[in-house]
Amino acid sequence: MTFRTELNLNPSPFNISHQHSILMLGSCFTSHIGDRLQKYKFNCISNPFGTIFHPVAIAKTIAYILEGRPIDPSDLILSQGLMVHPDFHSSLAGTSVVISQEKMNTAIDHTHQLVRQLDYLFITLGTSIGYRSLKNGKIVANCHKIPASAFTKETTSIETIVNELQKVFSHLHNVNQTIKIILTVSPVRHIKDGLIANSRSKAQLILACEQLCQTLPFVSYFPAYEWLMDDLRDYRFFEADLIHPNTQAVDYVWQKFSDHYFDNTTHEINRRIEKINKSLEHRPFNPDSKEHHTFVNNTEKEIQLLSKEYPWMKF
Image (cartoon, rainbow, N blue to C red; front, side, top):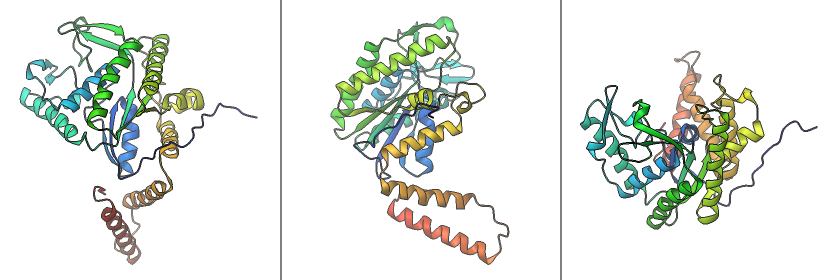
């Protein structure tokens, strides 16, 4: 008997390997996958602008990256002791205009320098419910605990989502014609406005992804949302808040990601790195024993070997 509906995906027509340059943008679920890519020493930058949930805000972030333009300091706002920016996460904010400018402009400059060398851009869309600033009429990436009276709340249409993302995706492809963009929808549920609003929001995102994949040949879709909601489909795969996927669920999606995008060579390198990671976490019974010194020497040799093959790998 079958007790669940499994989602099986054929191997991707393209492979992701350790040599590729990868940029991860979007919701906190992007960070989960990015953390695992970094754990296995992929050449990956994960959410350098912090978590961003709304597709229009993500499109704006990509525009910053493409143009390499510094922020306008007049856009910074004081909120609870930090100089925040409506287009950036609070992790890039500082206690002064100078500090905030430096952190935000550094993130922009760093990613701008990499944009022509990127092989993959992985984007996770979180919600189509956005907040529009009454001050400038634009969708913000983060409200930064600013009073709700400063914004209007709206659900962004599929047409707007597609237009905003298609515009920056096409610009990005003109700059870097070998880049591949992978879209996914976050399985993290945004229930502040209720379950019905969340379902409608996710549906908007899924349909927008479909249109983008049909229109742009360099854009594809990875079904992380469907693996959580239609395959695992059980609250035991969520944290105690019943909203965020737990470690077991993320591990499951990571395994699906690996099976879909990695070839045998990449899997073998990951096994070597996993062995090194476990060795580095090992707590010796007797640090002065001959056996432990041999163990340490063997681990160091394997690290040197991998680092020689892949110079960016740091252990």
